[in-house]
Amino acid sequence: MTVPLTFEALVAEAAAASVEGWDFSWFEGRATEQRPSWGYARAMGERLARAAAALDIQTGGGEVLASAPKLPPVMVATEGWPSNLAKATTLRQPRGAVVVAASEDAPLPFADGAFDLVTSRHPVSTHWAETARVLRPGGTYFSQQVGPASVFELVEHFLGPQPEEVRNARHPDRARAAAESAGLDVVGLRAERLRVEFLDIGAVVHFLRKVIWMVPGFTVDRYRPQLRSLHERIETEGPFVAHSTRFLIEARKPRP
Image (cartoon, rainbow, N blue to C red; front, side, top):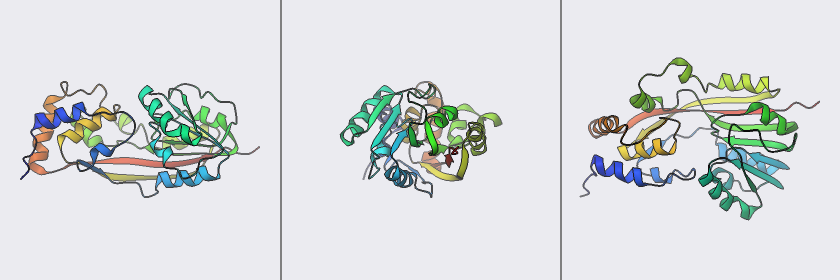
């Protein structure tokens, strides 16, 4: 019979685990997340196969892009985190893709109208004017994004109740308005609320270390009381349930 790990052991294990790249395999058997019905990676791959020149913004470690069966003749990706940049370069270079260092809030280092497809999965933020600028007329922006109040059951356990402007900061209606203000036509917009389960406190620690914007400044020492109370809740009641929100947006640059 396996003896369950203690709070201190679970926390120490998660605190020592690597959080580089955008690989979530560490969570296997420790957390689950329902996936959106639209299948972003498959849909992105279909669009990449038809493109002549494509850009993947905030590519992370390049894992999602690596899943595409066929890349266009010109394939470029941007990433701002040095560790992710190195991993993405290793994954992409053998297939002829170029990975460029660029922070999420900086202008895109590409010419006007350079791409007929721009993609992005879970961008920290979307620079709509720059996205529209680098698209060719008739080109498409295709992105899966984090929606409003995503996993806020967990966030508010650590930070307390959040104001409505924070809870709705990533609302898909705001994305539509921003895309249209940049001169793009929104041709598709879908949203879903999805179940997330954390089976032990180690999964919570790893998640908050990896997705650093959920609880800014998170450290085990800073939030030890909240971690311990959540551990006791999981031990007593079972998995901690939260809900992620995702939306899929497709926008097109009009032809003259």
